[in-house]
Every structure is written in structure tokens, then in C-alpha cells.
Image (cartoon, rainbow, N blue to C red; front, side, top):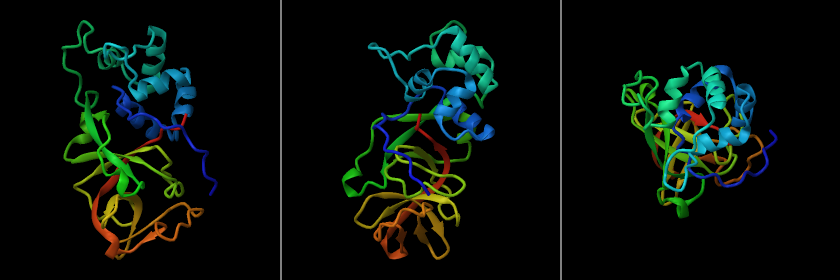
Length: 231
């Protein structure tokens, strides 16, 4: 498995339409934001700013042009006005409730997974998902450090965000986030016998490629969404 090149550090993603973008990428089999931008016929810089949650000096979201908003609505298969109200909550008519699956809710980014005990501090910020996605779930997000999971059908790369459901803690052969004894968080594949391993065949770190049960403090939960950050 060939690893992707190192990415620049990306601020915690908090864009108001992240959930819609992630869901449509999953439906269409689009693996990264660069390809989504091409699919939507929107500049990559614009998509990056929206997902990152770039704001003006007074804290307002950066607003795309009407032409860009229309292209995004077409790509996301959503009415243009719904995207407008998500991006600009003060726009006239924004007080009219949106459909439950459209309304966005924040998920806290708890920290980094794969970075060791020096990264236990919470990261500032949130990512946003559609409210329907949160139903019956207890969600928390982690920023990924390293490429140990950059393999298999659903690869996870450096700086990606993973959203974890803390109500699902033991699904074998699925990606999970776990906390190690006297150590930090890791994102790994859960195997029979409560063993954690990596999906990237090129990742051979003897300490982290395979993790035995005695080193696991707790399995935080199953990864239920991956948000790729590579443009």
C-alpha cells in the first residue's frame, strides 16, 4: 500500500454543511474533497474553506457566491435555500425549521487518535453532521495521526476526521477508536479476541501495528463516519 504524502496541519473542521458533503461523498463513492470539488464543479479552495469553517474577522461564515451555492446544491441534491440557511443563519427565512435530515448539529472533536499520551488534551472545535445521523447515537470525533489505517475498503489517512459512536464498542472487523493503558488514543481495526491491528500493510511499527488486549484501557467506540481532509 502506497502512503499518501504528508498533509499540512488542517484546523478542526467545523463547516456548516460538512454532514451533507460527507453523506453525498459516501453515496457517490467519492474518496476525498478534491474529487468532490471536481464533481461539484466548484473550486477546491472554496470547498476547503466551507469544510474547514473559514470565517470572517467578526465570526460570520464565509459565504459562497450564488453561482457556487447553486452548483453545491446540485451536487448535494438539496434545495439551494437549505444550503443558504445553513451557511447564513441570519438570512431572511432562516428561522423556518429545516427538515430533520438537513439540520446540522455539532460533534465535539475530543483529540487526536494515534499521537501518544502527549495528545490527550481536547482539540478545540467541532465538526457538523446532519441531525438525522445522530439519532440513537452517542457521537464524538477524533483527528487521525498517522497512516496505520490507510488500507482496506475504507482507508483512513493522516489528518482525517473520524466520528465514533460510543454506543457501539465491540464490532469485530470494524474500525474503532481505543484508549491505551497509560497512553493515548489509537484508531485500529478490532479483531477477534479484542486484538487491535492496522489495515495498512506498509505500517510495521512493532509497538502499534498489532495491539494486544492487555494494553487496551477501553474501546471508545466504532467509527461510523470518515471525513477525508486531503484536497
